[in-house]
Image (cartoon, rainbow, N blue to C red):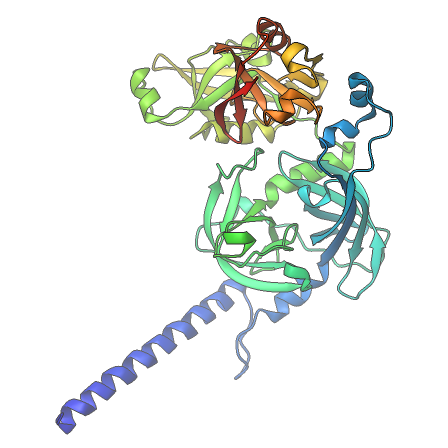
Amino acid sequence: MMPVQSLAGTVWNALRAVLLAAAVAVFSTFSAVWAAGLPVLGNDPPSLAPMLERVVPAVVSISVKGRLNGNADASLSDPFLRKFFGLPEQPSPAERSFQTAGSGVIVDSKDGYVLTNNHLLENADEIVVTLLDRRSFPAKVVGTDQPTDIAVLQIPAGNLMAVPLGESSRLRVGDYVAAVGNPFGLSQTVTLGIVSALGRSGLGSEGLEDFIQTDASINPGNSGGALVNLQGELVGINSALVGPAGGNVGIGFAIPINMAKQVMGELIAHGTIRRGELGILIQDLTPLLAQALNSKVTAGALVSGVVEGSSAGNAGVLAGDVVVAIDGQPIQSDTGLRTAIGALRVGAKTRLSILRKNKPLELTVQLTDTNTISPLLVKGTGLLSGMVLADISPESAAYGQTDGAEIVAVDPESSAAAAGLIAGDFIVSVGQQSVHSAMQVVQTAGNFDRLLLLGVFHAGGTQYVVIP
């Protein structure tokens, strides 16, 4: 039998552990309250309610209805491409209707502007915005931007509340944030968490990536919703989550408001983004590449090619240069450089800090307009019949990652489609020979009458495809 004194000691130790855990929980809660600048009055429990009462009415539910082609290539709904292929003017009725829902944030109460995600509005025929007070309005698309996944809507409504815009550059890992949205159709749901990481990239979104990572629960339906700090300022637009079957596992991502704010201004002013470009092909400077190049640095963006006559070429950038900073801001990877350039307007002058054979250089480059580049469409022949190709332009998802030609459209009845090729793939080699343009792909493929071996870049990797 345990002595009474020993038993009392055990009970006391257990009680002390419980009290300590409770004290930590209370301290953590009060820390969040203190960080938000919220008052604690009398015996009332601490709460984020006063802040959320200002934010939640500005977060809206967005309902989207549209139509998708069934098994056909969606790009073949374009009348020009149908005429190009000699197909009937009207596509076959192999379409299906869809309805989806997401979130948005009112950022201008006077003009009714709503920030949301671009992917939420894809193929939309009808968009309806519903407010907290249950008023619903048809929404006009002001503009969309696929690389940043940002879209701006406008609703004809009065008596709106808007969320003030914060400064995402001031965020630190460990800062408290709240996610507000409509997960699973549950309107104006709030979850609390912290900033888990900043500047996340490499998530396979094929766009400009500079995400805020948070453990605040972000679930399906949260897309386009608000990520706010504890002062009630908008610091991010919820965009993506990582988890099995789309479920939350404590890893969510939001687009920094500084990026969204810049895109929003351009879309409101012009309806589109006039994004500048350098005219270079880049890749990560990996430790192995650094060793092979005898480079003193092991991080940066390695220039693998320069487009003739481009702004970078005219400024003196050469293949083999390593970009280590832009306007004094360090560059750690090719993604970092693409994101930095993507944030600059056409005509902007930027200073590139590069290493050329380990010698530092400073070059000033004036960005040109990516939207002035209109890639020539090339119709496939022979084994590539039923395919339309274009040179890889700065607007292409693979620009800066690979060289070759982009598949713009594929006839679903063609041999190319049967081999698994789809619009959005990139042909980088034909018969184990590297190719650099759409015309070169077609000309080289013309030398084969069977077993055409293609190197295809898809989803960040290259694989071989055979057209028999």
